[in-house]
Amino acid sequence: MKTDKGSDFWLNTYYGFTRDSGHFFGARREGDFTASLCIKGDYTDLYDQAGLMVRVDETAWVKAGIELSDGEACLGSVLTVGQSDWATSVHHGPASILHLRITVEKGVLRIQWSQDGMRWPLLRLCRFPKASTYLVGPVACSPEREGLKVQFSEFQLGAPNGKALHDLT
Image (tube, rainbow, N blue to C red; front, top):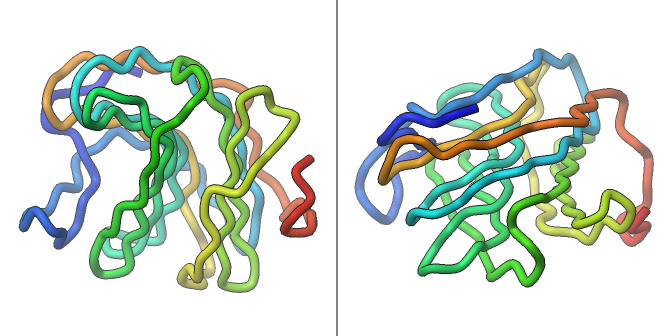
């Protein structure tokens, strides 16, 4: 995937603007699920970002992944339910490759990340709108430039994995 300039997902935020122009390739999923994928990106400019998105509609969604902020690769998420928030922290591993896993089950969303696809620490746990169907898949945005190049692989979408919260496998 190669991004367009000004592409982003952001709704009624601190910055006072709304964008619904990011690149998203969503597979339709009925009911609860676990989704995962591997992301390889070449992040160079402020807010370059790529990851995994779950979308109910234009007012209810989450995106998670790597985002370049203040000159550093950050691991983060944006939860939107009428308004977007932003949770982020510096990622201490290589940003060029990242695995993400999202589980939506019984109105709860769990985001996990992995550097090697084996150990999956928790990134976020929160309420998420229940829906009959979701769109789930890779997302990439570059609000400040065009041309962020991202490669997605190993996409899986199926039943919730049933793992306990502190099971990092």
